[in-house]
Length: 284
Ligand code: PEP
Image (cartoon, rainbow, N blue to C red; front, side, top):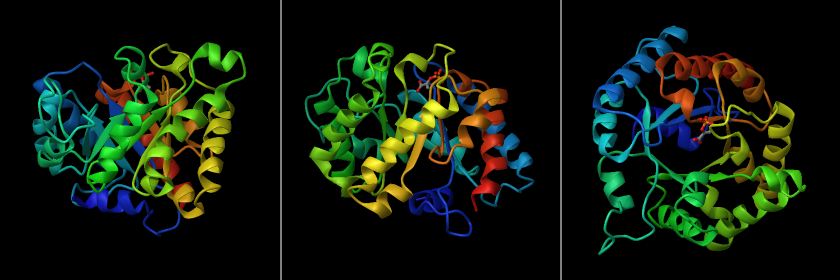
C-alpha cells in the first residue's frame, strides 16, 4: 500500500483530526495511453506546485484517477512516483470463473488498483445493475479485506427529487448494501452522493442541496456506528468544476468530489485539486 493511501485509509489529516479531501476522477469510456501519461504527470506537477511540495512529500488531500480498464496498469505505473491512487470503474461480484468480459477484485489488486467505483448511475441505468448486484460487488470488496476500497455511488433521479423522494431513494440504496455487509463493511469505504440529474448535464446541486443529503447520509450511518460515520469520506459528484468546487467542498459533510467531465483535462482536474489543497488547511 502506498504512502498517500495509508493516510487515506486511516483517513487522518496530518494532525489526525479531520477527514481528508479526496478528489477522484472518473474518466468513463474516454482516454488513451497518451492521455493517461499526460494527465497523471500534468495533474501531479500542478498539485505539487500548488502545495509547494517536492514530489516526495505528501499532499494534504488525496487524488484518485479511474481510467478505463486497459489503462489501469499503465496508470498505476505512471502514478506510482506521484502519490496519485488508481481505481477501476467496475468489478465483478464473482471471484473467478466463466464470466466473459468481467474483471475480478484479485485482478484489480494484483495490478495495484486501490479503489473501485461501485454502483455508478450509468452502471445502474444503462447496464441494469440492481441494488442487489451492487450490494454483492460491495460485499465482494469487503470479503477481499477492502484491499481495493469500494467507492459506492448513490443518488436520486430528477423525478425522484421532484416528488420529494431523495432521502428515501438514497436510504434504500444504502440499506441494500448495509443489509449485505453491515455497518462494519463501511469501515474502509467511500461514498459518493451523485444526483443523477447533475451528472454530465452541467447542472449542479447547490451547496445547500448537496450538504443536506450528505448530512442525511452521515446521520444515517451515525445511528449505526458513530466512529465509522465520522470517518467515512462522502464525496459529491455532478458537474463539479473548478468554478463550483470551492463552495461545494466548503460544506461540512462534503469531503471532496467524484469528477467526470472535468477530470479529463489537466487544467480543470488540477484546478479542483487546488481547491482541495486550499480548503484542507481549514479542516485541520
Ligand atoms: C460522474 O461521472 O460521476 C460525474 C459526476 O460526471 P460529471 O462530473 O461529468 O457530471
